Amino acid sequence: MNDVIVAISTTLGKGAISIVRLSGSGCIELVNKCFKGKDLTKVDSHTINFGYIIDKNEVIDQVLVSVMKEPKTYTREDVVEINCHGGIATTNKILETMILNGARLSEPGEFTKRAFLNGRIDLVEAEAVMDLVNSKTEKARIQSINQLEGKLTGIIRKFRQELLELLANVEVNIDYPEYEDIEVVTLDKIKNRVEDMRKSLTNIVKESETRKIIKEGINVAIVGRPNVGKSSILNRLLGENKAIVTDIAGTTRDIVEGSITLNGIELNFIDTAGIRETSDIVEKYGVEKSIEQINKADLVILVLNNNEELINEDKLLIDKVVNKKYITVINKKDLDNKLDVKSLNLNNIIYTDTISMDGIDSLKNKIVELFNLDEIDNNVETFTNTRQLTLAKESLMILEDVEKGIKDEVPVDLVSIDIKRIWTKLGEILGENYTDELIDQLFSQFCLGK
Image (cartoon, rainbow, N blue to C red; front, side):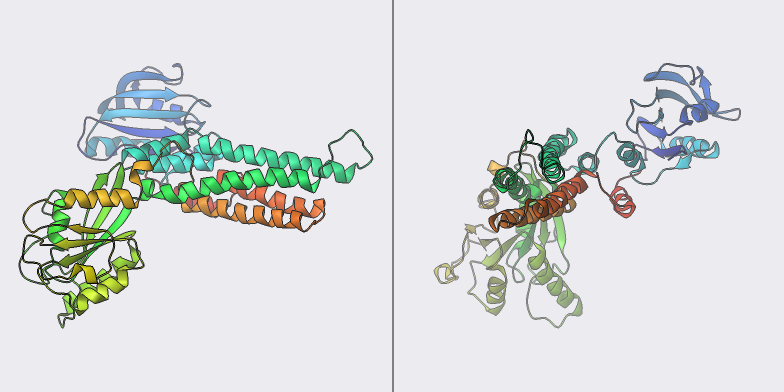
């Protein structure tokens, strides 16, 4: 990490400004070689300086250069940000000039990686940075900010400190049994602390599993046989003509996607090809993909035709969705009723028609109800990705082993081995213990310049 890295930190394209960011020892001197204005090596930290970026004698652009000296920077290294006029040619030319003068093009997420490796943020906070950049809804943004502020980190550190104190007392008891003024750590004392920790961690894990939809959204598959009105329902949900609608069965041969935000949660709708027996190779492939989407979806909207009797394709779909979270939409209610709804034994039935938006609000309200979207609290500390959640669950399993060992009256020194394992697992969540492979993989998912 001794070299200077550089990247464009704004979206490349036409705009008012672009930012080229550098970090590392020597970055101020490097930019100063290409800067016509004040001597950047002598300006105060955290100042903005007007001037020009030049390449030999050619002026590239009129700029504002922010100089920030370590350690009070994002990476805890010297950082320079060049604010130039927006535009692909200008921004790329400045980036090229920095590289020709000794900077290295950064890897994705390398600025945040350096912030982590230099101890400015922990791994949970680093992941929150990525989540914040990728946030698509207000609730996702708030959840990321809460994690970035270190609320979850504080809880994990508290758990680890309690475990460390237990371990220290156990070790003292074992090594210095002759001292009478030290606290004797009994299995009962360990049991009380471990039980409290298990309950707290269990609650966080449960809340995390419930609230993962804040970050990931809800994947909704709209399924049904051909010509029941799936594409019309998708278009009405999205408020635009995303899918082609005709009276010809089999018009939709591939999946059509679209998203809306409902109560602060992103809903990702997938309109699938109508499921039926067909000899058309393209349509057959679309049907196979439709069945695959049913298995992947968090919610299935099963569309049936009010104007037709139930047929084998309908029954096939009903069998596939009954074990999923689903809503039954009886479409074309404005036409003659030929469908015996009472015989279907289906839940969450909503009626829509072929002409108006009637029933769409009821459909949205049912989604809110099924996922308790009105009750989601952004201020609850949660694990926001699979890595964190997996380590938390592993910690819970070891906590349960500890409780079992205490119940079986296993010697304290053996119980302490499991306590040390929990302490280590929780440390992995924060990045106190990590492998280079994990760090490289995690930060590779970031965008360039962050």
